[in-house]
Length: 227
Image (cartoon, rainbow, N blue to C red):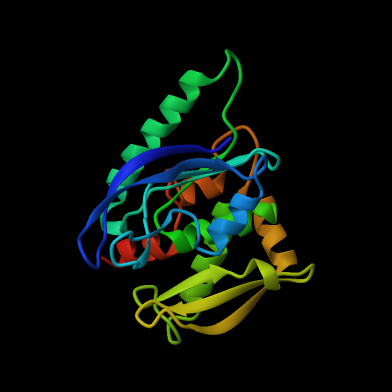
């Protein structure tokens, strides 16, 4: 079930303060209406009691799909401060493991830094795609299209609603204007070949060697590599 806490919140418009109950974690397998609220940006949204200004609170949130058997931890941060988010992620994992019965393992838990990444990762997991392989596909698309868009200025996002049996669909977003500029299609058959090549059971897989650590981002990898 969902977990909430009460937080003192200051309105960014009039600076008045009020206490608000915000979500710390949610299980959409048990409360599917919370998924809809999150996708519509209505979750952890506040209306100021004084000036009636509405705004969203960006905070740590554990998204759990108990039916699908996976979790996503959203720790709002920038790529430059990813180390802090990773520390918080590690603490959350330790706390959850301590609560598990002996011998039981955690389901897969992903780390994302932005709300856009959270929404995209939900679609990736719901489509039963491998998040690391999807990021590797993005890496390939970026490196093959550097004359059209650069990772410093553009984000590649999986468009889960446009994917089909033949193609995966990615959208290019201009990070300055936030506008969606173009659509790119990637053959699902090629994606499945990459899964067979890069993902193996047992030993450390090739895809984990390419994208180690809990935060997996082709864009971050390319930017850091260039630096």
